[in-house]
Image (cartoon, rainbow, N blue to C red; front, side, top):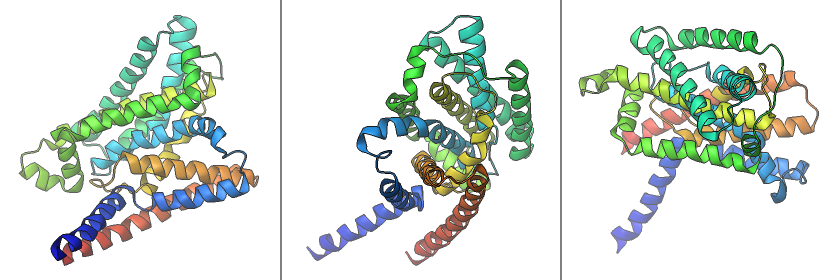
Length: 328
């Protein structure tokens, strides 16, 4: 009886440690920021307005989720082209598919967004894993290419979106987010997920164990591209048109959200849930600062501070977990 009684607290502690390992300090910050927003702006955060809030936060959550797989693969796999992919998908869907070709079928629009994202992700993966260009340099090149192409074909905001896509800009934005998480749950059930985390943690040990390191990392960029394509659709649903300037603004905020959500920028630790909670934290911080009429410059300072603090907290978390493993 004593052994059973003592094992239950141990299991709870292990479960809490596992959750903390996946999400970092993001859940605690979520509770604090949500409480602050409810106090200062109760009408905006009333239960009846949650659907609208979900729609507003969805593109940022999608961008953060999209940024995570490449980072989990390690070796500095920060893909800074996620935002421009979203903007490029937005331009192609509205300007080319809807306006010029008159194609509004969900199957065609969603398929095109996913294929565009996968193709750009494959390009990033080829540059970063096969040609072995530093990931941040490779994806910077893609960033500039996509921003320039988007501005060339779409110099100014224009167009409208189909009604079914517009409807995904509110409470129904939970559907594409749910689809992304279902895909990730499926990936987690595959050997690939364990390979990805092993490669992110220690690629030399993974290679010695017979894991195809290059292929695993390449596929992580493809997954990031696919998720970025879906995030581009969520952004399109929110703004209801094509706008060449919005997509790139999500890039650095998404990376900050990933770091805040307990995903190690060195790779091999964290997950999509933590990235999503980190994105919600940033959205809540945006809402609080906007309520007090802080300028966009203050928001930029806040994003930079969040990124630095998140990295510091992750480092402290790594040290603590290392001590726990050493004691055990």
